[in-house]
Length: 205
Ligand SMILES: [Zn+2]
Image (cartoon, rainbow, N blue to C red; front, side, top):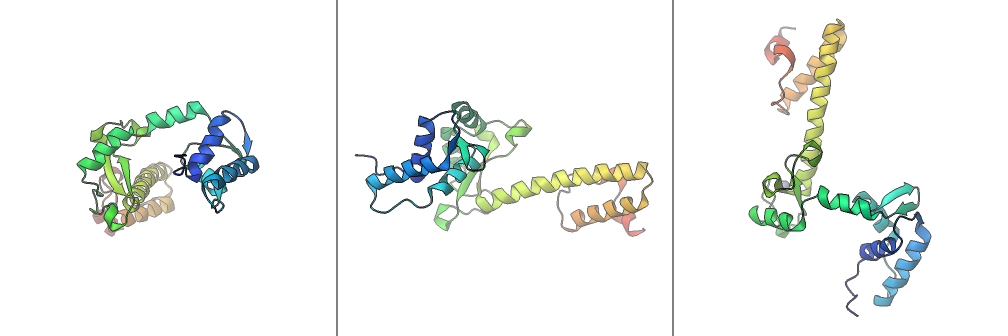
């Protein structure tokens, strides 16, 4: 048969790929997947519905509305160019010794590894080996959060400058306090505080 390796996700994708560009309610999908699964297994599949949601989160299925999903071959092509090609991914992992470049943990330590774009794709980063790094899930998440704190700091700098222009004293002090928190935790120090505002003049307040 050679079909024993079919996972629930594979089966779900198989069904959607056989019905491209159609809005599919989950009932018939789950029925078909369950039927196919039972050809290879003696027990029913675990939560095929969850697999559909996960495939949607991975960007492989479009959520049309609650309970209705669609597969678009064009979308899948986009995903391919969006992420590193598998060969490049493998080379990055190999270069990094199959370990997270931050904590050094690998699969044998029980962590899941991802290949991360050092410069994000939506900021013009490429799919070249030089733009890739191996991260564990924990540090990948931390990186994401960290870049959000960057966006936050830039946002507060804008608010601060507006507050100065509007002579909004309270908002100025509020922003200064926010910048102090950034300094205190030593986060995003590469983004300077606005116009010479430093911790020292802060203390004279
Ligand atoms: Zn790590």
